[in-house]
Image 1 (cartoon, helix red, strand yellow):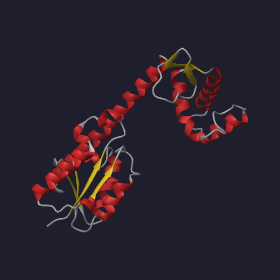
Image 2 (cartoon, rainbow, N blue to C red):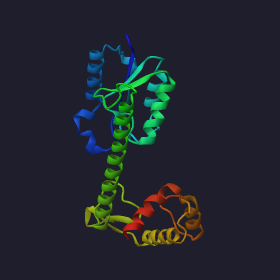
Image 3 (spheres, one colour):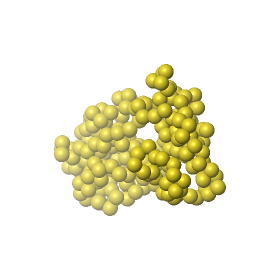
Image 4 (tube, one colour):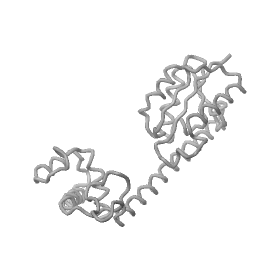
Length: 233
């Protein structure tokens, strides 16, 4: 009897958590039923899950534990291929790691994972590219919506983004912070004059110009959000 290892994943995006077909328990039940139909042996110790993890993120501890648990001849079972990855590069990295273990992977709904015939590989490649497109297009829509809300002064969540402060008359709104807007304009000018400038170099320039950070010092991780804010000012 072929031994199966089940891997399930949920997205960090709240709107996708509402989809029952992508919940952890639902995925596990569907994978178990599939394994029963195929005659695969599954044990509780061989079910791995990553919650609130993106399919474009290769840093998923339980995914790699699942792959490391595979022995020659085993099969890694997922509900859908996009549970393994949502990008072409990430898909190939994961598939290579599975095959290196002498194992295979299969989606409970097929998706070109039944075999390695040319038509199966073609279907997998098409679905990989489609998943990546859907993810990128979705991110673009989300980014556009966030920028639109920021332009209109709508607060999105608990933390107010750099460049703004809470509106004292309305907790659901925010208003520009004049001092931080000056910093954003400074960063915007830097990127305009030096497109290849790094985030760490921008931090050094901000420190040299005596701009005050929100915390103890400027950190490169805040620079992308500042650049995003600069795009809407």
